[in-house]
Each structure stands twice: as structure tokens, then as C-alpha cells.
Length: 564
Image (cartoon, rainbow, N blue to C red; front, side, top):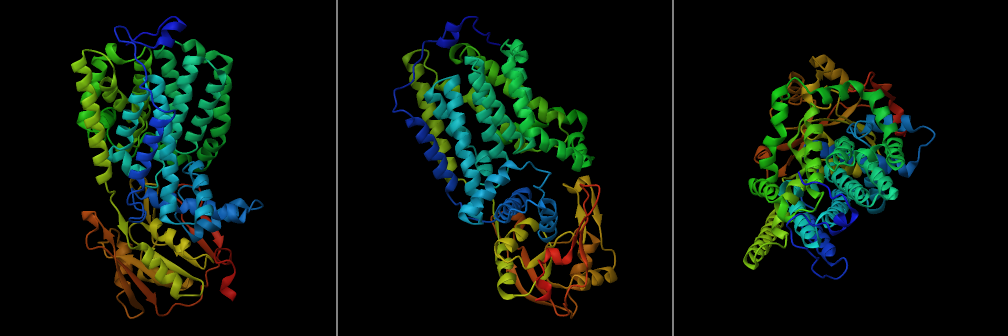
């Protein structure tokens, strides 16, 4: 490991032993950063109107939760926020973002919805704002660690990686969390080098916002401590600035995590410990290293190893320690968490890209060697630009058409039963296309799951009589199902019942997609010929993540329009 220079002048010079003094190529101020942000913007907005919400199912729920925040901000039910939330969830049951996921992204998304309207493009533009923020701080961080041209190359190579682009083009929490984490990391590194308390406080502020965006930011406190140890500055841990910074981050994110524990502690326990279908204890230690080649690519990994081996010729004094601290902290944190997902390699990918690209941008060796390294960087960036421009995310479309068919041709308040894939996508368009909120979507009336199916699943309807009673008491007018093979007996029961004379097929809506698994899929819209006014006094939502069900009076869900 590269040792830390004992004197301030060594840090100021920043050169590693044996390295030639380097200078930034003269550019107009912010010129390189402007290039980076422009390229990221242009490639991310390409095909931004294509498809709806589908990625990993979570994308649909992040979109609906943003709509909830928009409505909350518009109505400001400060006197009864819990009742408003329960009624909203009973009407649009796709709000896993309330309590389970932190609130900061949804607050920003809700504001953007208020300004630009609730559309798919608006939701994706919200993620794009965070992507540009992340690219900005990535550039600033690498420039601080190395130089400006390295910052340009690393940032473009990182944000044009296919799996990073996929998340930039999806309404997921990973890019927002990464952006805020990189901002926190930048100010943390600035604090390590300048010892300005202000930088420590800003780092804590961004870390708190990252934790209020996604739980994965929990690696940041581990990273902070590990950098102090690996740069031999662990004594700073007990200084007043860092104690105050830790208190600031705790005060910002602590209340949410306390509520999260009190409300959904059982689900949190399953996620931390892992599920019965998750990897074994031994496999946990190899899960993320095995996932890296597919996510990052073998060329980047190979070049990152070369970067470590050649560190004495290109890396600054304490840069390698900071890079390795990021890798180790992410590996330790995500390995200890039982729930695994390959996309969580996103948070340590910047370190591997810097190790891979950094040596190619360094100014050392003979003239021929420097020319070859510059040519390699140009080829890398050209390939990244081509790859990014050609990239098209997997997409699904067709749910909006079903929702608009219902909301535009039926004027009375009524219940709609939905049973199919991507229920959150359908619910989003039911809300977005119905400003008066006349419809209630029954998504959890037949069966329910925990946050993930392997953590718990329960059927609620077991016979034809129970199904008929459900349809009658709620006065279900429309039923939407997909034509995929049902997985549970209750789903088979519903589809069999839809073949009776009581129901009429209104229209079949093809689902467009560039994914093979979605080929030939359709959404089938049925009308209930015997639908009547609801007689149920309450809407009950079975909750496996809480200690009790959500129960809301029917008239509160339909906003009193039953008596019109």
C-alpha cells in the first residue's frame, strides 16, 4: 500500500515516488466538466420516451410513490397525514416506497411531477438530474485524486457502462444514491486533505441524504472509518469536527431508520439475514466478486489489476488507499447483508474504473509510451461513446392504453381488479389518467406477498364462492388480467370465472417489448355485467410487512362519490 506523505508539501505536490510531475492540460474553466455533462445528458435522454415502468418491478413502485408525494404536496393533509397515506394506499396499492424505502428521492420526484406533470418522461428526467449530479461529483473527485483529463476519461467510462446506463434510464434509487454518495465522498476526501471542518459537515450532510435515498448508502460510514485507518489518520475520528459531522448525519437520517425499524422490523430482519432461497453462507463471500465481470466487464477488471501493479508510476500519495478503502467497505457491507443483487456492485464500480483508466492517463515513461497510453484512452472513450449511443434499455409498453380505456369510458366511481405482472405500472397510469381519483385498484384482494415472494406469500381467496363474494361486495366493474400462465390456484380460479356469461371481454391489449419473455403477452380487459354499487363498508389490505392490516372506510377511498 502506498504510504501517506508525512509532510504537507508532499501532499501538495501529490506525486507518487518515481512519477514525473504532472500538470493539467490547459482548458477553459469547467470546459472538461461541461463536455462530460453534455455527453451524459445526450446519451441518457436518447429513447427517453420509449416504454413504461418495469425494471425489477421496483421501478413501478418508485413511480407510484412519486405520485403519492405529488398528491401529498398538492393537498397538504398535515392534520391527518397517516389517514391520507392509508387511504391513498388502499386506492393505489403500490406504495412500497412509503416507510420501506427512504423518502428523499420521492420528495424530489414529487416536486418534479408538480412542475412538469406525472409522465414517464418526467420520472426519468428526475433520475437524469441525479445522474448529472453524480457525473459532476465523480469528475470533481477524480480531479482531486488525480487530474482533469483522468477525471474526464473516468467519468465518461463509468457513466457510459451498459449496466450504469440501464440504471440511469430507469426510475430506480441506485443512481440517486450513487450521486449523493459520490458527493459525500468528494467532500470527505477534501476534508482528509484540507482538514476543513466545513468539508466534513457537508460530507455528513450528503451521506445523510444518501441514506435517506436508499439503504445501500450504509457502506459510507464504513468507508469513512476505513479511509482514516488506511491513510493512517484514524486519530481524526475522535476530533470535534468528526464527532459533530457524525451527529449531523445521525440527526438527518436517524429518525427515518428508527421509524423503519419500529414499523417493518420483521422484513428488515429477513433482508439483513437473507432468505431461505438466498446464497449460502460460503457463497455470500463470493457473490459480488463473481457478479463484477458481468456488470463491469473483464477489460475494466483486467486493467484495474494492472493499475494496482503499476501504482508507483501513476497514483498520488494517498489515492490508492482511498480507492481500496472504497472497494473493501462496499465488499464488507454488501457481503454481510443477506439480500443480494448484482446491481449493488454499482457502488464500487467507480473505484475499478479509476484503477483501470488512471494509468492510461498518467504522464510517465517514454514519448512512445505516453503516445500509446493516450491512444488507448481515445479508443476507450470512442468505444464507450459508441456503446452508450447504441444502448437501448429493455422496455415494456401497453399498460397505459388499458388504464386510459377504463378512465375515459367509465364516468362513475368503481373498483378495478387487477391480476397480472407489473401491477404498479397499471396503478401508476390509473392514477395519472384519472385526476378526479374515481377508481380504486384491487391488487391485493386475491393474494399477497412480502417485499419479495421468497420472504412470504399468502392466498386470500380459496373458493369460487369467496371470489364471487369479493366481486359483489366491492362492486367490481372491471377486471384486468394478463394471458400469462397463472402461478397460484386463485389466479386459475379467476381466469376460469372470467369465461362465464357474467363477464364480457372488452378488448385485448398487446404488450410491446424488446424482451423475449414478454413475446405474445396481452392484457385482457373484462367488464362485469352484474356489477353493482359497493356494499363493503371498508377496504382491507392484507399487510405481511407490518403487524396489522390497513383498513380504510370505503367512502374515504372513493372520496364520497358513491352517493352522486
